[in-house]
Amino acid sequence: MWKVEAVSKVDNIFSQYVQKQSVFKDKTVLTSNFIPEKIPHRSEEITQLSLALAPMLKGFHASNVFVYGTCGTGKTICSRFVVNQLEEAAKDGQIKTIYINCKMKKVADTEYRLLAQLLKELGECVPDTGLPTDVLYRRFFENADSKRQTLVLVLDEIDALFKKIGDEFLYNLTRINQELKQAKLNIVGITNDLSFRDGLDMRVRSSLGEEEILFRPYNALQLKHILEERAKTGFETGLDEAILNKCAAIAAQEHGDARRALDLLRVAGELAERQGDAKITEAHIDMAEQKIDLDRVIETIKSQPSQSQIVLHAIIKLAESRKKTTKWADARLLTGDVFATYESVCKENGIKSLTQRRVSDLIAELDMLGIITAKVISKGRYGRTKEISMAISNSHLDRVKAFLAGRFSP
Ligand SMILES: Nc1ncnc2c1ncn2[C@@H]1O[C@H](COP(=O)(O)OP(=O)(O)OP(=O)(O)O)[C@@H](O)[C@H]1O
Ligand SMILES: [Mg+2]
Image (cartoon, rainbow, N blue to C red; front, side, top):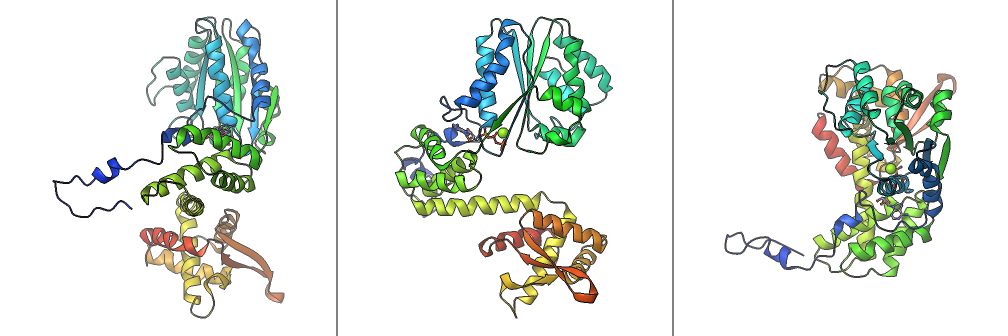
């Protein structure tokens, strides 16, 4: 392993690192933003999407498309690939694509920001705040219609946009074509929220989904093949078949998610490199799985509101105090006890506590996130309560505790 032996200016502390052959040839190939030259196992979906958009190359009306499917099934990569090709095939910039990831902060949080971003993509500068949105709409409209062109607006993670600003904006966009004289506007909406469509206004749903394309999860064999292709250019030396099989099998079990498979391989490579190993082994994959899992748990907890974090803190505190008599994972806590501990944590930290009913809702949310397990039990004539236990694995608890201890005392 690379270890800094003695600190002096004579031997640069990075020299060992620099001299060592890297496991990676090109790490960017293994990151999720990279668009590879070949996209195996998606020719059907790519064909469907290109057929829907192709008419605009001849100046005809093309359908708005709704792309959906679970995480890591290649929706983003395939859509970006197709619109890139479309732009390339069009003459004289007659087709312009605008890609927006609606989950990105400061881009699509408000109608104003989104319109400002669209105008920016069309080369027009808008102040960060201050103008009425109808002025922005008009400017966007006039700019778009200033020449004969087709705009393809790719709204990735469109469900996030809907959650933030509702469907009025989408409604306006889908109507805009009726007023444009020279230009045309097409929308490609992408989501992994399979129930998103059901929440939309009927009119928006039908115009947005003139064409719908479903991306199915990959199976283990397909995932292995995808990994194989990326690994060829990503890693310095070839990977053992067993390594590819293992990553593919883990990702196939988890909804056929190609991002998961790639992350496993990349993180395993990073761990191998850190340990000074020349090759990735199955042990590195196991460690990578643990690390990714832990990062995910911590990220989930970090993204929860403070009150939820306090509830979790209280649950862990209470479980720890019971640890002396039972095994940690077996500690069964009742809502009432959790609430009492929660109230005392709030008091200690000078935070106003919520009602027991609200805390019970937060417990249900933590359960849904898979952080705890809450089972409803009957207490005879005393009514019903919840029995709460930890769902985070023991190996992850220390990091979770450290994070919460950094936020709340004691
Ligand atoms: N067929 C494929 N060939 C090569 N790489 C792929 C393929 N499908 C997916 N990937 C890779 O897997 C990762 C996830 O793909 P992508 O981002 O397109 O998924 P997604 O369906 O948009 O997921 P999400 O719903 O979470 O946004 C990316 O790194 C992408 O490059
Ligand atoms: Mg995506």
